Length: 338
Image (cartoon, rainbow, N blue to C red; front, side):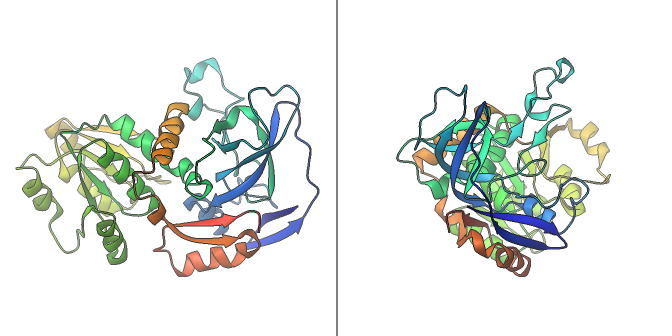
């Protein structure tokens, strides 16, 4: 079978290897598609070399069908469409308080262990979520990042009569906006990239550039002066942190979606003055995956428009090089059977 491996220094190799039998408690998946995630791009840039054991097959945004079932696995059949929730929480402790998705010893499959950028992939059965036979496997490869968005919106407590501002119109920002809009809330996207603004508008969103309009004044106008009930910080840059407390209204909730690897400045006075709430959000829980699966199954949101390109797994090196040259794209899928 074919597998891609990250070797460091922005290099991937495509190798042929034996198809392995699943161990006890595992299933073997014939991988259909794997989406290229921002984390994968960070790995490609060497930003996670201290964590990644090279050479490593990466990838975790995937879809596929069950190809073999290991001993002790029940409830799954050959040919069944599935996705993997790539969290290995077998190191959970009582001190984790039952929040297995953020347990202290959590391992992320596709980063801390081999991932889905290969034709066949053995995974623990407890990571599987079933799909309907009619589910489009290309769209199903969006379920993992969509689950992130579902988790973010769920933790925000967003209601249908509220206004949400999404700061950052990249792939996760657009998915957050989609899920937020599906609640019935008014959604405004703030994004500096003109192409991403155009894409957001094409998808039916109210999108503006804070470089061209005063975002606070714009949101005030849209909310009769109330400002945002919920702000999703998805951009991960200092200007986003500066504006998030300005654009949030009284008792607004700010959800920290972006990952900040270093300490940043935040206007804490605004938290006192407006009784703001800051909510941390990390990955997803089982219920978020099931909600994301239901949304993809319904397919009433513009998921197809999120897929920029589909390329064969054998072209992985070029795919990552092209992403570097065109960072404005949305979601590239790897066809893991080519």
